[in-house]
Length: 287
Length: 160
Image 1 (spheres, chains in turn green, blue):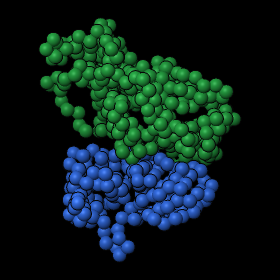
Image 2 (cartoon, each protein chain N blue to C red):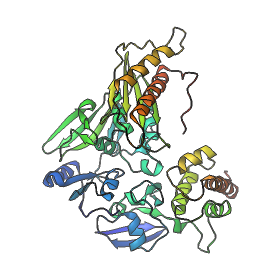
Image 3 (cartoon, rainbow over the protein chains, first blue to last red):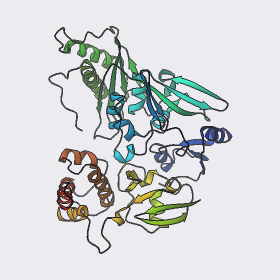
Image 4 (cartoon, chains in turn cyan, orange):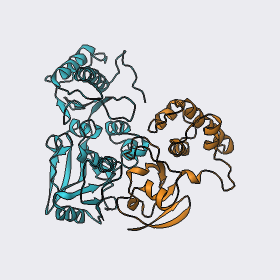
């Protein structure tokens, strides 16, 4: 369980990091928080020749709201995401990432670039219709959430590109629900629900290679009665439709049927939370 | 690569290969074998230490990344005269350990918890300690120990 040898480069800036990655061809990898990369190296699932450590690159740890969008530097740690109060959905989702010792190192851009299908942040990015700013050799570009995730652990990013900033619109309403064997374990299935104006978006994690987006056909949120109670039947309809729309695979952590049943329940919980009031039979999720 | 780091208040300079994890550097280069290794890929929590005030998996950080860092390991818990830290004393008294493989990581995780939350509930203790795996105790003794140490620390340093 020792990592294979590599050359280590402590990048001094974004341009330096990109140039080093560019010179390494397809043999370079960015080292940010290392909470996903180091296990991959220890298990010898990858043997990059060069690691470019971006932890000392200045200017990548900012966190500020501009307009209706939270802008996050690439190196903002999960602990900071969980502690900030400008994007409550992001704070809730970040509390579900690993354990404190993981959250103290792991970074927002690292999680997005790793693109684990069961990870929380890719689902949040898609549910908020966010985007990332990307620096590459000689050019920068902006990649929307829908284009960033290509497959399990695969993104649209090139070998010499790095995420420098994450743009996360702040939703008008939100809900988050996750089922894992233990808090901090990889999610078996998770659901993120957002409302921007009248539009509801629901993203399901853990059921496909990339976060699975569902936009309820009737996007007007008639989820509440005139007296403000949650319309349980409307929530259930959305949850049923979501469960019918996924094609999960079976693995060690759960069968396809189990994942479909979980999809129905986590979507129900997330949408009920979005609607404002938990439904009466909502069982508390262990903290 | 030459790096310097402060461990339990003592400055060290070591020459490490980039792939050397911080856990291996502590154990092999500095002889501080109190930090244990279990899974070596971030799952078991045995190697948890405190780096610049935050708990970290020492197997998921390269030593070169700890250049200039201030590190606390289990060796720094007991007083110079051998008096156990309240957490160590409570783990011993409450049967919070049997084989001891997970204990250094448990102690350092609990140390950070009590530094940030002096009076955590049993649920909070369970939630925070969930990242550390123990194959011996069944965890009840561990939760008891952390709860007991928290109470003892509040006695020793009551809030003004």
